Length: 206
Image (tube, rainbow, N blue to C red):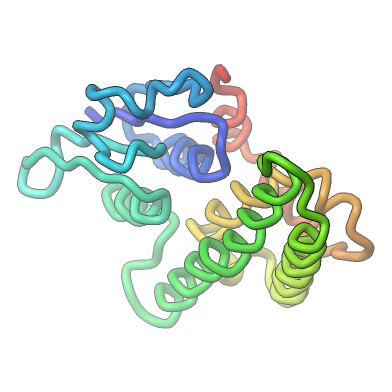
């Protein structure tokens, strides 16, 4: 049985979505990060960094227990365990991994900077906020150009790359909606949001 420790963050939703998509049985441990539960000894024993998501699989490779953090690592682990959302080899696998990392690093860095400077900074940071607003808009434009040529981020098929990106843009849905254009990205967001597994994941108790 898999145990997932997660919460209402972009990274947390990635892990919940991929498990819902996988069909693998799992127990959900929903964590209210405002209480500091992620810094308590019981959770630090699973992830010493004190960050969600974290996954524990008592039936990992070779039957050994696996404790895993980092949302992209969880995406890859679950996809490979279930045999879905990540091609086994070839150009399709390379493209999927590239787009997954592009979402997590390029878009993710811009999104994190934007949130830190507009929502979590102890005092206003207008110059930094403007910088990250522009970076986030540019990254969204890049994603839109990719989606102009394919139904999903890594090609014709839905994959972990889409989950990696969706967790980010869903968290800043209002920012994306306010940006001009981006017809392909916005249509893709609506398509992914309609998936039953995504709806189940987003409906988890906050």
